[in-house]
Length: 346
Image (cartoon, rainbow, N blue to C red; front, side, top):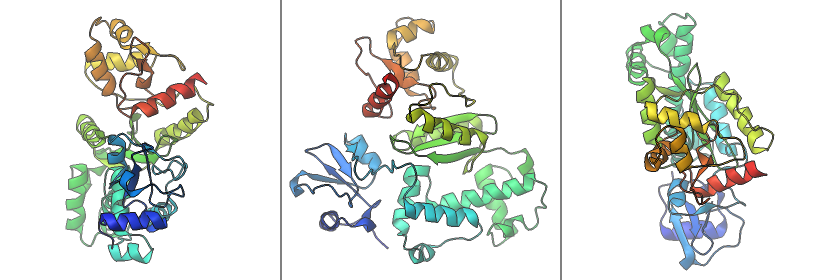
């Protein structure tokens, strides 16, 4: 089992282009401003120009851009092959509780799995598998299955253990499962890196890049605001936004049809509602936005509300710029904002 490697080990792994260290650390090059996976085929930099990071979030937060050759944010439209194998295994049989030894038998490093799932889903792999088991158990209960046996069917060794785990995640015992609801979450790949989407049975309520430093805080606020737990899953809203985002990035879609739910204060809601009316390919200044929502001069407050938007791209906060035409701010990073604006202008 790999622990965090030493600088010498990281340098050696980078020089060898060792794929087994992908996901364990990331290599940033000061002279180019780019960060890569250790296995990147690009020409290797001088040691004095290298900086190592344990996660892509930290590399991005330090001002580095992802490499276009090795795609450290997994921008090839799907998770890495080893993650796909793991997802297929756990989703086909959630009751199969995979230990670290089981992961190693699949040639998957447990540390790498924990870090990847934490970075992309906001939870460790074991927490993801546990949430999946409980989510399917809830589905069975709602379908009318008897409580007796549901816990055993999903890998729990006792009814009391199942009940305790259920209460921790859903906030109520299994007998009340028919009255519970959840925020279903899935990862969506994009040319700008993975995005985490969440939806209730009624609408999409969260869409954000997984490397945002405020992601966990946003998700916690979402759980508190909706009063529902977050579990891995899928529904019609998540399927639709996945399809429509792919069409958007391919330049084939200008309007989204996914139903949205974005509760907030009256001021926040007014700002977000106005954002949805900015035409594709157009921009709006903070000053104009403040005037349009009835608060002329409140540019700073409008900027704050803009940054608190929890549904990226579909509520197009990237279309708000400074009066001078400069980009201004963007929680997902200015390089993403420029990419989105360029895409829409084309």
